[in-house]
Length: 312
Ligand code: CDT
Image (cartoon, rainbow, N blue to C red):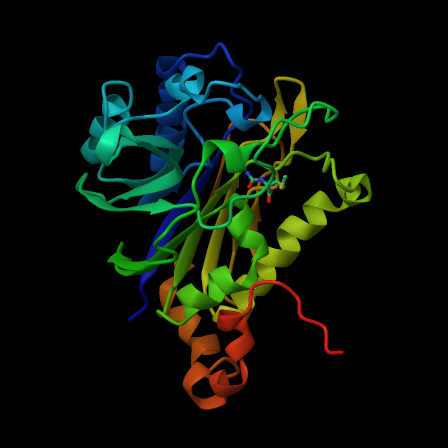
């Protein structure tokens, strides 16, 4: 018997600053309906799928950015998506900014994805682990990438959950560039990793990378999938958002490392694949039989050391 899971990667085009949550949720529901017509059981939306990518602007008083964050999920704005998905028997994974009240009047801000099962129950909310960009205002940039100002890094790291008849993991955008993200989930037997992203084409610290954005996107997800024998669903918010062009190239990658489906444009679009979760074992039980071939006793630096230490 094979375990087939039909997945729709629901790419979004740009969400401009003045678009309301209601307008965006209407778009998410339209994509949900398209996915339903293709027999999808799981729909994966991008990172920060309810708002524009607001870390491109710096504000001196972070509380003036509070309106970009959700304070509960579901909430009034997203309840129609939860209701419609449940009615159709489709699960989904939704990226958004979360703001939580903490003791002593503190506030915690996270970049998260929530995974919802086909019956509407919440499986888990994953917090982004690798927070890229900068902490302070850098006025010389054409646009900011101040994620390190707006979000704390996850204290929890990468989990894997039993859902959708398999073992499902999550990561968010920059996490996909780090082999550790995949391996930590691989060591928990992950069979499908869900990853939303917002990737500006222009990489300010080194513009020579601009032309390689699509290549690097595919490179990391294809290698992460293959080296861990897992499906990877990478979902973009692409197109020109508030003047900043972002990568599309939403894709579904098989445990072989092959791209089985890919977006054609950079606007709202679904990409669907019938994924056999049992295909993972072809890699997990052979070339990447971790228990047989890994040498963790020699990998100590990976966990004990953060930056590079060059021998004298
Ligand atoms: N959203 C996000 O993590 N984007 C980064 C952009 C590069 S770092 C400025 C990414 O890794 O795609």
